[in-house]
Length: 247
Image (tube, rainbow, N blue to C red; front, side):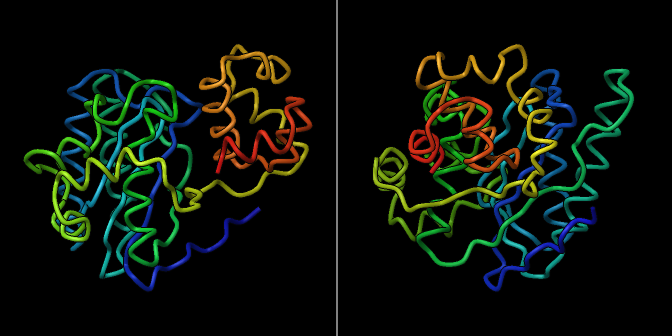
């Protein structure tokens, strides 16, 4: 099935997600992470874009980009190609590194721009790893310290100060926001994708997991393209619980 055209943001701001192929690790070590960030910054500068926020997870990457020249496709294609070549050559890997094309959604309005930044920085907490402030591989530390890869000026100006950024980042108040999702899956594919997301867990075992871990995996299922109804049918977890955990 052909992929739908990418939606263009009137604002020029995008939340972008890159997924690893087959849920493999995207980074073998910190040298890989630093190389990716260097390539990201170089690609952004080449295409006249700015990196406002970023977070490197083990098998996916979140970015908040400003792309005034509508060069997002070229930027992400060159970044993914260059990093995949380095990753495969350095590690002796073969095959695709990323799962197809990147996913993106336009970010319109100041409140959503700030919410996307917060969502990106809080990905490690959502996954049950650690608090945003304790995670070393996101731009959170650039907002409270010296920026290196992220252009922090705009969002800090909107918030007023670094102290306000810290308060905003940890505030329980949220604007309803859903990140870029893969295309909705047909029912015939839902079980296969769920097995890929859950790994050794069966779908029916998800309801018995500790709450933070369960909710993190529910979010991954939704971000992988499963509908609430599909998740409910596969896991036996109620629709209300799924909705609360993933919104």
